[in-house]
Image (cartoon, rainbow over all chains, first blue to last red; front, side):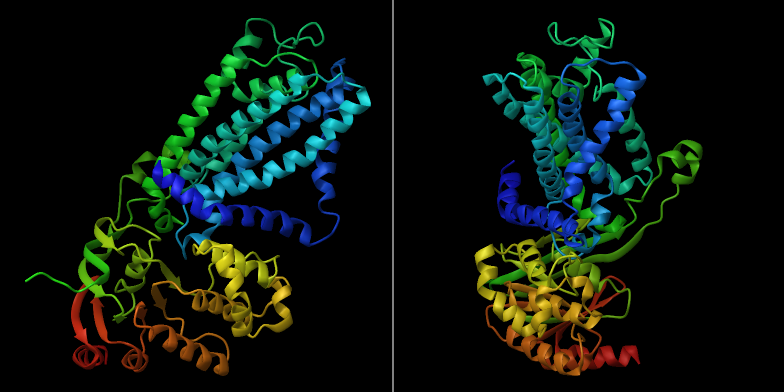
Length: 267
Length: 246
């Protein structure tokens, strides 16, 4: 633990700088590249609108804001996890030349995708304004909810990164699992009813069960509850998943410390 | 009598093996599990013990595949020995090699910061040395252009300049005395010499050139098949080594 804090402090600047550098290199080729950070969620929203509204006849209140808030959180999680699978071999140039605690690469990715999440959350705010969503002070609960999301993402990604070094076809598995995760996290539909404003798509008790077992579904639902529907988040479940996230992070960091010096021998 | 020499590096009975961790495939493990029972063991370093006093310049020789580079990487902390211990007594260490790994789309200047931060320097320390690095690298205006536009010579010049000018207490050099054109080669050689001549700095040089080692080093460590074959001053070891290699 003390080693983690020491290393984190030592490499914190590197992490910030390399996150910025990665974002910068994304826009270096053309000045309009950053537009994709906004266009991406926007275009996906139309896809989901087509599926949910045109095909399945959904009549969700504040549909665009509803989809964006879910999409952003999910994208942050899934992109970070997916990037972690091959992260160590992607950083081969660095890993073979100098010592870095490897979980710093995960932090770097969290920085990159976290920044993009903040940018695309502007879309949520814009659409909320367009719908004249009544604001309540509950909107500030997005910060603790985001913390749960980040801790969980870090824990899962660090463990995935470790196994990604040794398991060649892990990416295939992770891609499929994430695809499943996408459909059971309720990006363009609501899993459970929110007050009397939103109807749930799943029958009880499965809706409740899914919210309890799938942290992403829980986080996304709670984002919507506090931002759009003036409802309180599921505090107890959030707290439980926060601790699960902490345990995963702890296991991940400990595993990386134990095995990271063997990574070079494999890649 | 107690040993009063101040050491910078202590390597005790270090063994490094390649094998234990092999890539596996989930699909293949399920379909053909028996294939994974075979394991080959290759021991690159087979129980090496030596100490390097602070300020010493130690040359490491040996034929290809004798474990020199493996040992150097282990001392740099890039991977851990499977057995034994390496103690650097808290000194900072860097492996001087061709580039820490650049971000191709970013400018040379930004890559200097990235590499410097990776080597454990603070932003202020890098700010201080920035001009010196740029000047030494002879890149001129190219420093603000993306690294992907560099020629391979320019690339390695920048890489060398970063590690050579951001000095650490222990420097490990792995055959980098041939960077860039003839002029830069001479310059980097001189720089190397001045780096090395600092009495506080401990240096390990891996090289195949007896000529270079004779000029730069105090002592020589001769590795053969992962074991120490001989250790001593240049005059003791190098003639034997040359005889062995010819």
